[in-house]
View 1 (cartoon, helix red, strand yellow):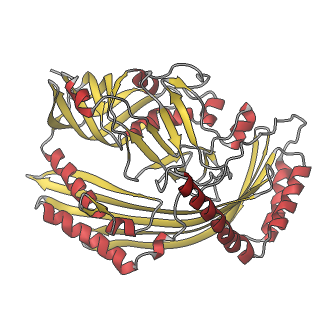
View 2 (cartoon, one colour):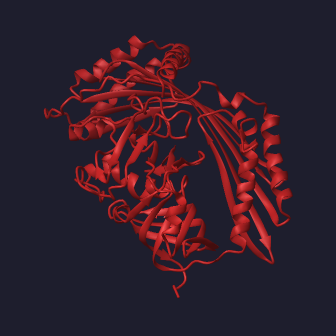
View 3 (tube, one colour):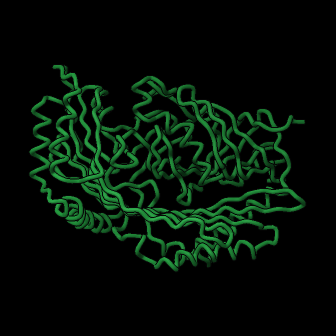
Length: 499
């Protein structure tokens, strides 16, 4: 980010703070002195940390299935989460009311704590300026409800006009606008953020000779709904381009051959295939798993865990992307963290609890679904840096292998690092050329082993279009992923027997 944009975003952060304080505190007859006096009471009980997390959120969802609006949902919710930490003990309660009486009652949480004299070293925080990463505009109000419904109907109409084999179209439009305010005993300051978020998901069903296949596409980010209908991409709107993409994927799958199986070289396409990096590597680098010794990457900092070509970043500072954050859900500014550099593990993703327990620093990765949840170490936007090869050079280097372009799901065991991913769009590579499409392609392996098998990385890093949602301990949060095209020397492919 250049200095001029930094200045603008810093000033916007200050403006946002006034708006959040007014909407969450002033309107509920609370002032900051009230909050700090209550936090002082926690501190006098000799606990390590106490915080209030206030949230006010509007969200909506519209779903069209063929020509019928099946859902038109709108909700406003607010509340406060109260958390205290003493050593490894965590106490938490929440209320969907925000008032001074609720805050005063929160001191009772400490009654169930065993207070001992073990001292956890206080964190020395870096002085990081807070720059907002997105607009403060409410996306839900930027276009009329009729325009939202028209958008869904137009996508349905376009999808069915592209090919007569399109039999069913499902479109979902979601948006939210939330204001958060955090106060804690670490610095006795008010940390605030205003967070817009939108997403458009398109699913099409195609049929030919009683054979059915599906295709999906979509995108979004910390933007407003005008992004879908006005912003141009290749001479058309994003909504229209994603509609063509969903139909394209579905039609390709209609005539795809069954996937071969066995140990084969694999090329991952750029963009959304970064979900494999997120799941198979990123989760294993979250501090809670490593503190509990349940991650395959535990005690590996400073060790080689990947090919020297690999540098992996988790970056919450990218403008307007789905996983970006001005501050995390403990008030720490969003940061750009180098997790793996030239194959060497550099750090884990930290929240304040695990930073205290391991005598390290928070990395801006404490995230929670809402005020009714505790924060956990989570990813923001996780991606691998580009290399020096071209995609064409990578494809040309393979005599027989798999080119996996899109994924539709997978499972990962954090303890072992073992993963299973299903490709929604994949192709055979024969003699350096992309050959026929295949389906039923399943990628099976271990995150650390696969990272060491990467032998070529292209110069075409791309982030996903803004569709990622990460689940952990029952909490769903928005994330981003990214990847350049890369070559894995060998990976187990589940499919039919290789001839």
